[in-house]
Image 1 (cartoon, rainbow, N blue to C red):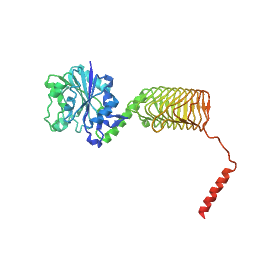
Image 2: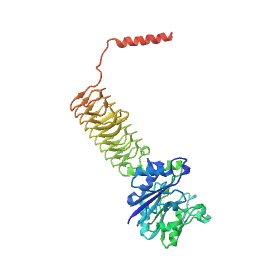
Image 3: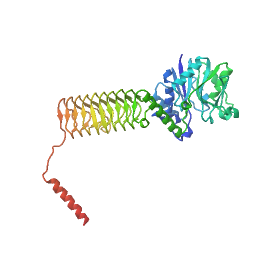
Length: 449
């Protein structure tokens, strides 16, 4: 049976104290709404709809960047959650199966929880609501059950004292029959304290229509919403704790787990070792047997098995590290493919480059890839040896088994097997250093008189 997804992301998020729409604030280098979308990824939703509103242009731009196929609809006036869902009516036309309504500021719903809601639908419920037992129910809406079945949801401000004593709270997440969802939405009114169309009223509407209703519960941490900067910080901490636990469980060695920070899409295979204070930006894949040494920063990079990165290395987007490569301390790479067994061990910048297998780049090697307007590429062949402090002024290539002399500024291609020497001839001036220093000291002493 088909699954569909509607993610509500129209709110202003005034408590964030930000000009940025709330759902664009990031956890683990991804906007909050991306995490909400990811919650249902395992269900392979057929239609995925994002309801934008406040800051719609910025939200649309970010959403298109994340996934150009995402369907985006606009809630031009924020008149409640049911009204927001109603904006997806056209995008959902003709859909059958299950439809989830998730929230762009609630990033931690687990796939297992959504599957439990699907099962409740299979067991006969037309509407399934996700609830949680709250340690401090506060101002959450309450789920009211009778004989084990969900009877209705009541918002805190509309609840009686007896209803407020209930600790089973509403997350807002629902799973519904896609063919009946908008029929039920149309039954919802706005006769409440806020004059808004509450999605919570869909339970009563379903019961009036003779549909079964059910509640599925999850851990309270899954339902954590992000409304303030403090909650955003707690969400980041929760994500990192989960990611570290998952990595350890998958056979990754973290020598100081609390110091390693993952991105939302970091992929690390078993038998990888990650030393302290490593930061992963988006788009990183680490293959089995690699070692990431302390204080390294990786983003948009692939590291193959047997490679050693760092300490204090920076891999920028477009970096592709092959097996048994060594990237050492204070080395930066960008848009660079470094082949099997090559070494860049010290104080180097390798950008817009292809480094051949078993090549060795000496300390201080720099690929000068930018002329102020355009980027240019450097190619270094297999087994080449680049002397320390070589400047490779791109576009330029160094052939297979070739060498450059230390301190060279290479501006022309170097043939296979050749050695490039591109520096001024050394001259030794006898006695010059003593005479020069004597003059400087004399001038200094004269100034003191």
